[in-house]
Length: 131
Image (cartoon, rainbow, N blue to C red; front, side):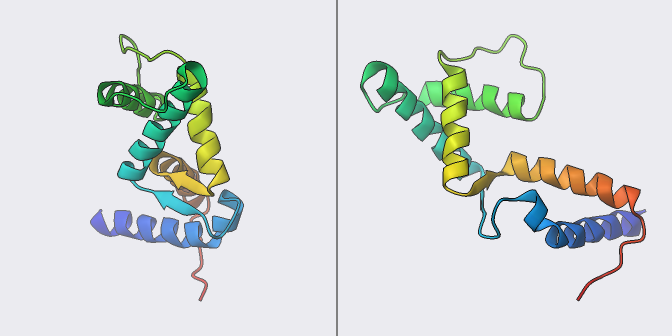
């Protein structure tokens, strides 16, 4: 069983490397870790505050509250009974624009793209290695 899982992961990696160009806009795409995602969210929130109130600041508690909601939403997890900050849709748009304009993907987008590749690998069991 462990060999099967390891083989499917290796096949997914091969498929991901082969099809990177179809999954991303550029071969020079940067993958953001969780810390970069949080920083991008904080900057997006500060930019949103600047647009609405004139100050380029945001409180840590608001960032963490939004981070929790943001992750649940992006991963399609339940968001019932979770507080959402004012202008959340604007913040989300600013965040997505920042990633797009700086040619970046966050970990959740990579995860989703890998999910597409996993299903592709499962549908195509005869993946031959390319060297």
